[in-house]
Length: 282
Image (tube, rainbow, N blue to C red; front, side, top):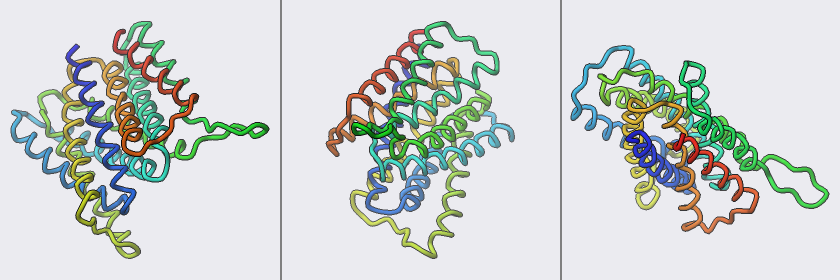
């Protein structure tokens, strides 16, 4: 039950952070947003790591660093997708795929969830198809919604980072998160150095900078809690519950941006939520 509750808090933090990062990327480059968000994440992760007693190994730091590299790649695709495409498509598809990757890993490595969990996973697969579907006019062929393809890749990277976090030892405390955020910052800095020749990466004062800071702090808070959650419960249970994040992203997009959600995607969101509830119940 603790893992389930933590998963819900993680979902709220991830969903809100994704919305903040995507919105910040609308008025400036994604790289600039990631630099600020990553720096704030490092600061937050450092505070948490030093506050928690731990006995960390090189393997724990290695898994954490690799998780951070995959995570920042997924976030870059997600923020870019949210800035250029509808949140009602990008956020749910990313989150559904991100939950299926660790579920598949858990099943492959011996975790045996009940029938309700398996039914929930099946519903998530159907939900991804509905959310990625682009409604067509009469006589036209149904296509793939704009933003669906990069959202799938973003979800795969984010889900893989969760699998790597789950490989760290419980005694390592929050040091894997700090290693992840440091590695992510290095990757972002290297990428920004190349982009600086062709574009201005300075993040202007105002809403964009505040949103980038908020995105970084929410991300590190969610990741820290997620690490605790996967150590207390099955990975196949925690991952789908944490994937409820898009519900918060879409809700915020609906409130702030007045995004319309068509019936097909309403059905997809509904199936995704039902599937996640079944996983939690199972």
